[in-house]
Length: 243
Image (cartoon, rainbow, N blue to C red; front, side, top):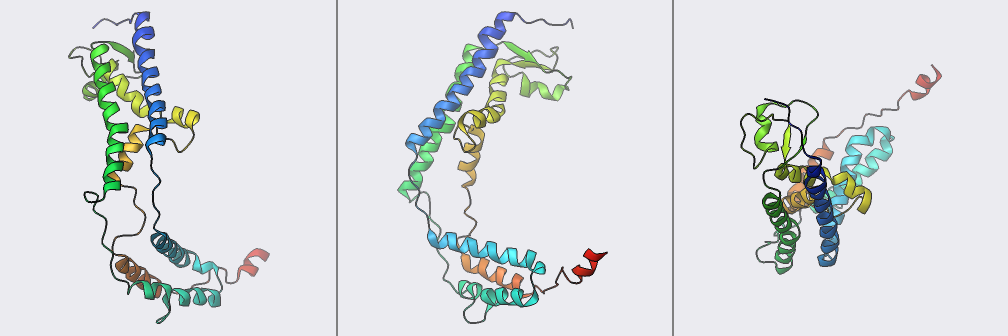
């Protein structure tokens, strides 16, 4: 097939507008999310439990750099048979996890997330697919196999077309995933313009680090720390330094 040459007007009226529209939609989404965001309540007990787990894991992993007396003191603070932090934690009654279907605040947050993330992506993507349908916008600077055609040439059904060409619809989705660094540069590190990260956070729910039944987690951590033996890694370090 002969080499294709794109009209320079496509760069002005198709290629650049898609980039600008995608970027501006992300900026608007960022500020709309800030306006619609509500202050989340913090469970102090849950945060305290997560800090206990972090401290216990740090002791298990880095206790070899402590003297044996210091290690045993910290281990006793955690695993004392009567007053140890992990000992009392594993006797705690399990707490029931909140059901998002019965919590009005969680339902409201889910609805806001759909409005600011999913809905704009569907509307803008559909409008771009309609307004710029059938255009080739750019070409990858390296050859690609035919398996990339469905991903890079959405809306253009040409079997003889080189797989390196990118259609307007595919160019929009590449911008959705590719403007993360630009958003970070303009809006800062923790921004709400990154649509892919926002959708991922909404689906996974941003775990707090403590399960709904903390007694099992306390018991597992207690057992892991109980079998940990102290092996001082700094023994004879003076002779090693002299050598």
